[in-house]
Image 1 (cartoon, rainbow, N blue to C red):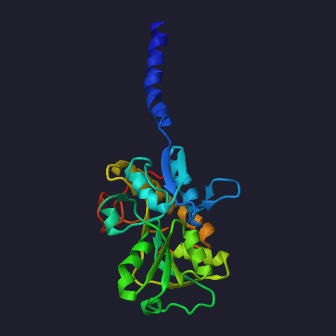
Image 2 (cartoon, helix red, strand yellow):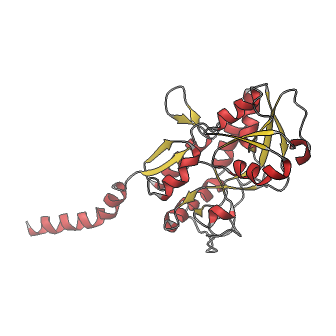
Length: 280
């Protein structure tokens, strides 16, 4: 009997870590479910898109379940800070202001600010072509911030919506001259609607699209970034990018670049500790 009890105790001790790992709660994250092709409604129910495939694979490699909620982007960061989510699965532009309040992974995509216009409208070649125009944006984004910063200088009218789909539709309906958003989203919208044309990219606006965490979640941020690095090395992110955006990313694209340390370099919250992920 004593031998059986001892054996049971040893077995429980050995199995303890595995049981603890299995008992971890699901990861909780959220997306803007109207931001195609990153996240948008599926005919089968729920949401689909690049972000959904990306973070389901991240969670699988971490041995965790994941719950992905869909909500308006303007409410995602407040919900993250309130503890509702562990991180955001939404593509989030890394700005200095945001990096001072949140922790980010390194970028897995580049984002640039690009305008979409209605077919037949005069093309945009410089900021001066925007003077006096109405620009539609998704609320709570760097696109709204750009219009707000330049509103007085260029006499712009801001038209902000809770979803990117509505912002793009405002251009097609003639309510706005142009829609400002991220390059991947503008190109995708143009590929789906012949009345919407991908137009001018604002020079010098290339930034990381990373994953935000609360400032007290450094360990989890590093774990997720290690997985993203492994997915860059084995080509998974590049394959997902080609599937959803229609182009195979080259070697100079963030889908393939391993940045030094943890987080976007030269931004607040960057940790220079060299990455050493176990990709086996």
